[in-house]
Structures are given as C-alpha cells and as structure tokens.
Length: 181
Image (cartoon, rainbow, N blue to C red; front, side, top):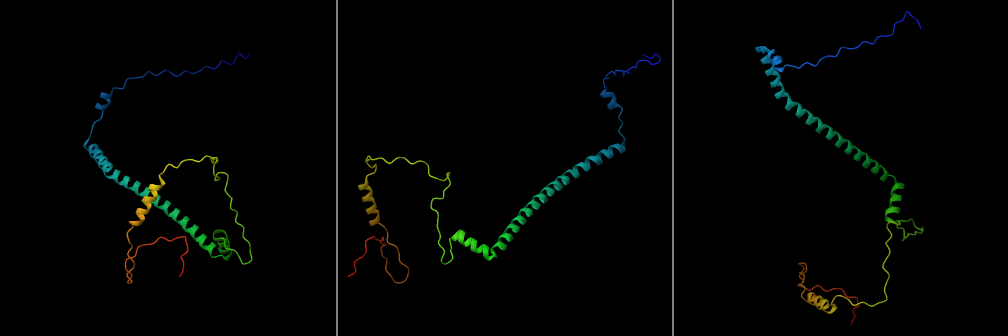
C-alpha cells in the first residue's frame, strides 16, 4: 500500500429542503402595466381569430388528402381497364375467351365437358335414405284440383293487340297433338 495516496472521498450533495411556495406572494409581485394588458389582449384576440382559420386549414388538408386517395384509386381502375382493353385487342385472347366462356370450338374439334367437376366443399351432403314405406300425403289433392280448375275457369280474358281481333281467352298449351281434319 502506498502511503502517499489517500482514499477517495465521495462528495455528498447537500439535501435541499423543500420550500413551500407562497402563491399569494408570487402573484402579488406581478405588476400589470398598460402595455402588458394591451399585449395580452392582442394575444387573446389573435387566438380567437386564428383558431377557426387553423381548423378550416386542417379540414381542407384532410379533404385534399381524401380526394388525392380517390384520384389514385380512379387512376388504378383506369389502368386496369386500359390493360383489359389492350388484351381484348389481341386475337389470341379473344379466341381463348370464346373457348372458355362460350365453349366455342373450331371445326373438326371434339369438346368434352366434365359434368361432375365440383370441389368436395360443393358436393351435396349425405342424402336421407329412400324408404320403402308408402306414406299418406298431407294435402287434400281433390280440393287443390277443384281450386285449380275454378281458378282457371275464372281467369280473365286478355285483350289482344289493336289489330281488329276481338277479346279472346288465353289458352294453355296442351301436350297432346291436335288432330287435323
């Protein structure tokens, strides 16, 4: 150990005492002059004048930003439509679209359409088993038949176009062929 060196001393900071701030004394020390009152009045007046102007400025900036975003979206749509227009000018693209969408083929080609091309999610769920038992219908078919015939008999006639044909009842097409005399 060297005798000439002294151990380091740590300096301690003096502890500051918290003083109570006397607000009355502080406010009493402020002296208002006429100049200071006029300047404070101008600052308050400027605040009342500028706050609505700043609010209007901020609102207008937001509107400008929204319109710029709208223009950007519209420009992207225009670019997409122009690209689509350019694709439709290509005869190969038109041929491809006619084959895929409309199932057009060239003469001599054979087309096979796959009928069962559903994904597993699109396939119908399990169906209920078919029963061998005969069940009674829950509707009265005779009453339905009578209502249907009555409604058909009471159907109003349809006015024919103005070509000199009198009012004629509308006839339902029949499945049986008509016999010719």
